[in-house]
Amino acid sequence: WQQSRRQLPSICAIIIIVFLFWFFLGHMIFALFLGHSTMTNISSSPEVFLTANGVTMLAVGSAVGAIFALLLYMITVLSLPLLLDREVDFVTAMITSFSYVQSNFVLMILWAAGIAAATFVAMIPGFLGLLLVLPLLGHASWHVYRLITARA
Image 1 (cartoon, rainbow, N blue to C red):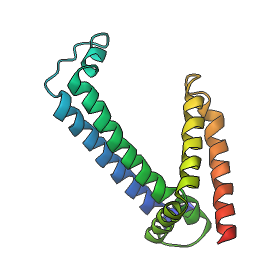
Image 2: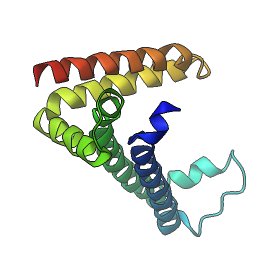
Image 3: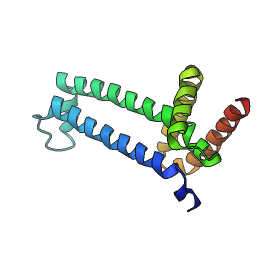
């Protein structure tokens, strides 16, 4: 409740808006490539994705999704812990996070790949692994933030 008067709700609203736009673009990409395809049931629908339009839709959708994922990662990887740690506005926190990822791109992409791999492996046992991995990733992310701010 103490965070409600700070900047964290504002950045959360930005994240939600970006996700909604991403969701809208996903629907639009699907409609552009497979809008006239008939998908009657779950057993015949995978065949639609193996057509030329289906493969193109998957490629374009993956590229757009990668761009949005990178954007969200760049603006939140340091800004969320920064907003919890210090009294700064959310725009400054997002710019700081984006700039740091931009200047240390390879290292931060490796960290993102580690997060993605751990999350993927945690989802394999019926998503139960997330109960262990998400708190560990949150704790590790906080330590990464502390290491970065200690150097600055």
